[in-house]
Length: 470
Image 1: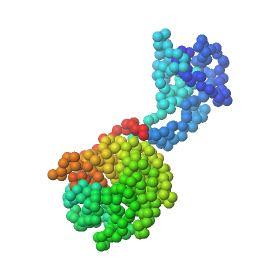
Image 2: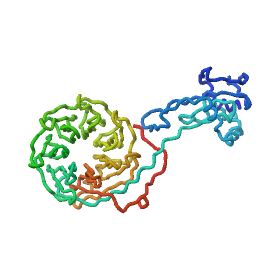
Image 3: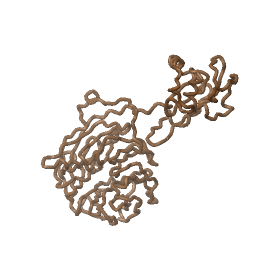
Image 4: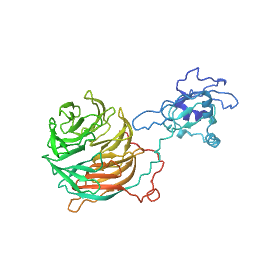
């Protein structure tokens, strides 16, 4: 017994203990030749034990904290006693019958013969029955919600260059696309027919958005221009001058007349829609700002950049609130969940989910190993990521489960290399998914009405989550 205590609990026996917490009602016994106390194996005498190792679960990166693991308090004396006798009798007998190590197997006192699991609770007791190692239960992925698969049902042609951006108007009657052929085209959503072409940009159109508050369409491009189109007259009524390089994206504030643009000049700019005045220049990124999103709640502006960071901005002060440095590669896409106070960012290293307002990390969505250009999500929790290699992955937002992967064939006459997805969006009813692609087409997807949970089961197992640390 003394050898067992020395080998297994040598490091623990030297831990400092408070005298008021450790009360022994057993007689003092002699020490062995190694200076360790000999514990009598008399089960009839009462002993109170000190529980060590119950520190709070570490709130480190990549560790999912649940209600059970957020706070660990020191157990009461009665709880300690109940834990101490929790070891099954068969295990106790196996420990008691374990052969004594020979001289060749002897380990120096203080070196345990097996590593203790992280977060183990070590009980100091008078016999084998009163020792227990209880490891923390690893977090597991909950069962994801079932989503029907999406299938391609229409391909719309008409542009003469890469289709770089797409937006659906609030009434859900038509949608607009911008292309490398320098045109903006408006299409009927139901039939897919071309309604109107707008010309005015002198380089690739990189961003389009339709206002929910006025009959205006906003566009930006690699010609450094930001334009406001009046859709009643189909002509440009305002220009917003100030960016020093290509403008890569834009977004409208949902509740006030403010436009935000982001550019290759490493800045984002906030514009008053009516006066064309530049309200703020958001400086801080050290490389091109690839994407920008607005919301009514704080933080009201979120940007993603080629400098691998995401910044959450104070709209009033025009300054950075939080900088997220977890990505290791360019952040080209950011999407806000329509119902939850969360958002996701896309990068070649990972898709990451975050919680507002401080950008607390939630989880990684790993597996889309490509340059992710676009993200979109609907209120049902279907997250779509589109990549440079033409692949599209569909995820369950809550669990991060990848339930479908799509790689649509390029159109006849296009090269296989021209299969990139540059932008995607759900329509207002969220029953259609539109993608803007490098083969000069717009593809429209719908949910498969014939699919059921039996025909397309969720291949999910309650395995331990393997989350990468950022």
